[in-house]
Length: 281
Image (cartoon, rainbow, N blue to C red; front, side, top):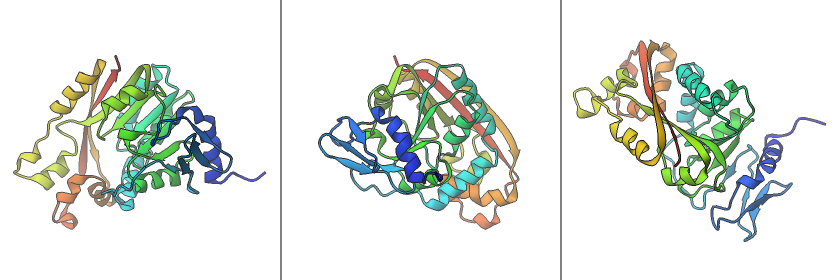
């Protein structure tokens, strides 16, 4: 028997996790048939695409992020720039009995894939993003995960489905996180600290109030919604290879504010992030 196509493999994987899905239209349970159609009792249906993902959006949403941005982000992450951050998250996950992980705002999925690849225990990993281009890129490169285009405010998942929600440099929806998490489930949210990409920030916002950054409001908001909060700061500066500079500029909105991109010569870059860990009440 030959190797399964991406679509066939996704159908098989998603059928195993069928109980975790709910219709984003009517909230009923869903069944995944052998043809790759995901259907609820009210006959709302969504098809698993040939690329191995499913689009659960109920209306068209125009993403501001391009395929090129996600390819650049993937290359930057694969360069190892975030490895210490991934290792800390793996340490946190390994200390808990985590079976099901949702990456909320997963983009092209590289953070999730790298983190799950370092875990010793088997996990079911699901990525959701509102950007179809991001999920297309994720499905192209990473076969071991479930990829969904969807709106986090109207997600296609049952209550108490995930033991952990990862939220990496992405907006949060704490009401939905609370609905989706199992009892004692964890949210791991990664947010910038004041030194994050400071070399780029200086170029983009020199002598403006945006040159300085604080995450105080984001951290406070996290603590208002979750309990047993722990904060781990990860900060380091490392050399940045010349060919990665335009990739870095393209992957972050900071780069969009740089006028003379071709004249930039960033030799090193600072990663300065807070990893926020909390549980639902």
